[in-house]
Each structure stands twice: as structure tokens, then as C-alpha cells.
Image 1 (cartoon, helix red, strand yellow):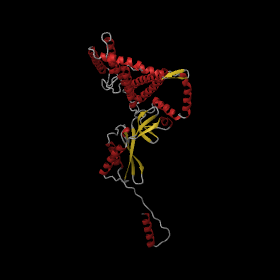
Image 2 (cartoon, helix red, strand yellow; image 1 turned 60 degrees about the vertical axis):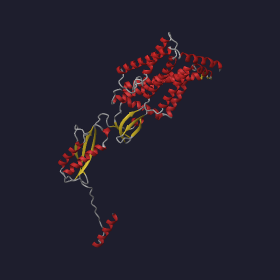
Image 3 (tube, helix red, strand yellow; image 1 turned 90 degrees about the vertical axis):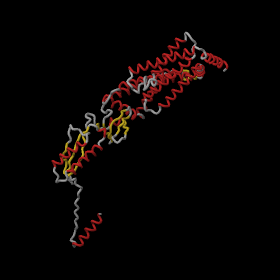
Image 4 (cartoon, one colour; image 1 turned 180 degrees about the vertical axis):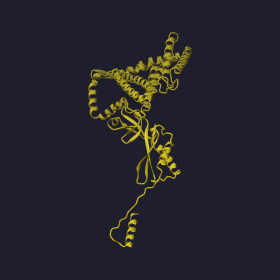
Length: 444
């Protein structure tokens, strides 16, 4: 232990002594110049290339929020460190460079996860873990303990089959795997942002399908590269792949079917984001199509999670597949002695009470049935925004119809029923009337 502590204390003493030299001011000036140049460079690039996208990994919402600023500052610091190393002993840059490396790792890891999984609850703990690991590595690097810790971890090893694994190898493999996966997520996030930019309707669904496929492919390739970096023999995964195939064939059949159905829906574009559909007696607007399920939001605010397999094997009514216009109707009864032509004109005018009703095609009024209580008219009208609901629209038109009929004194009949009482046998009138009275009293 004494042989380890003595060189470390000597290094710390020399490093502390270097901070007392006048050349430290030169290092601080060079570091400040690097900071100003990095700020200026990122500002110019942000004005020329950035379009204000908050999901940008390089730029972010502010200059220091993205990953480009610490990357530029680290590059300039390395250049300044190389130049100053030929003239003065370094002290400040021995601390500044590890700090900047940790800052770059934290910023890239956090921004990539925020963009790739914006609403995931597990992202926040992983962000904290990345920050703690990066700062811990920086402290070990600055104090000179990092080589000693790695050497001690390399002494803890064991043999697995024909390979020898150590704690150091596993940690380095895990860090390599994490770096590869972050790069894969970064590339997929950039491709997704480029594909989904200014996409609407049918293009949005198709581009989302391509984006999901690219992300899955990149993550798969990243995992393969990460496993190779750890030292795992990929040929051994063939047995595992066969077992997974059998599991999918039996236990995971429904899950696999939902994923395949999701890609089929996005590829065929039979249903798109924004379409109004009716599935399993639930009507609403498609707000999102994921790999496993589709989210349908009704006009009342309720959301239904529909498995993609159901959208493939069951009958689904797409109310806006070919034409976003939807036909709605309401039924009105008036008295038999009403003027049919006047009622038809009033109902047609009342249908225009809402601005949502289309003028072309115009509303239609039909004498649809001779009801038990009066004449039944059906008022039909077209709208182009079914996602806004139909209950409020029907209420507005029905109120306009009621006002118009009342203004012209057109009767809206109440339900009428005629009851016939038949008394068998020849009874005296008094007895018959009493029996009828008791019958009526009993029915009440």
C-alpha cells in the first residue's frame, strides 16, 4: 500500500505546486479564449443551420444546452493543451480536459435519451447514473487513481468456458456497449426527425413505419457490435435464437402478431394517423400508431388502446379513408296537418345554423316515414371535421329546428295512445261502469 500511496502523493504534490506558478494565468487565458471561440462557433452554426428544433441533440434549445458546445470546447482545449505543452508546464488543463470529457459524455447521453424516448419514465434514473459515472471517472482520472483502480479490477477474474473474464473487461465491455447503443439511438433519432419533419396524413404514417424499422435495425446492429466488443461468441446465440423462435411460435404468438400487424398497417396505409375509425363499437380518431398497438381517442376524451392484430382480423370502419367528409342526420316529427313544403324549407334552413355544416353538398330534407304520432322528416347534412364530435353539432341544429317550428306554430305532436276496454257478458250499465272504473283504477 505504501508503494501505491507514495507515487500518488508525489503526483498530487507536483500538481498542486504547478498551480502556484505564474504560468497558470496563461492557461486560464487560453481556456477563456477556447470558451469564447466555442461560444462564437456554436452561435454562428446555430444561426446558419439550426431551425429552432428543441429535439436537436447538437444544438438543443440554447447554446449550452446541446452537445455541440462541449464538443467544440473540448476540441479547442485539446489544441490549446498541445500548443502550451511545448512552452509551459500544465496544471489547469490537466483538470479542464477530464472535466470537459465528462461533460461531453453526460450531455450526449442525456440528450440522446431525451430525444429517443421523450416520455419514458426510466430515462431520468439512467441520466443520473450517466452523470454520476462520468464525474466519478473524472475524479479518478484527475487524481491519478484510474490506472490503479483498473489494475486492481483486472486482478479479479474468472474462467468461463474457454474465455477468461475479469471485472475490468466486463466494465469496459458494458461501457462500449452503452456507447454503441447511444450512437445507434443518435443516428435513428436524426433519421426520425428528418423523416417526420413536415409530414402529414398518409406520409406521416409511412414515414413513421420507416422510422420504427430503421431504429429497430440500428439497435439490433448496435447490440451485435456491443456483444462482440464484450467478447461474447455470437455463434453461441444460434441456440438461443432457436429457443426464442419456439417461444414466439407458442407463448408469444399474439405479441409477435401485434408487431407484424403494426408494420402491415403502417406499410399498407389502410389506417393513418388522423383517421376517424370505428372498431369494436368504439369510435374515435387515431392519434398514434405504435409497433404493438394503436391509440384511438374519442370525441369525449377517452382513449382506447387497440391491439394491432384486432385492426387486421376484425372489421374496422374507416370514416375518413377515401373522403374526410361524413354524413350525419337528425329526425323530426310534426303533426299530420302541417304544411309539408313549409316544414321542408324550415328544416333545410335550420341545418345551416352551424358553420361546420358544408354548403356543398348541401343539406337534404326528406319525408322519411308516416309515424304513429306524426310525419317524420330526416334532415341530413355533411361535415368535414368529424374529429370535433357530433353531439354538440346535433344539439345546435335541433335547437334551430325547434325555434323555427315554434315561430311558425307548427305542432310537434306528443305521443298519443287510444285504449279500448271490452266488457264481456250482458251486465247492467251500473255494474258495467263500476267494473270499468275499477279496471281503470287498477291500471293506474
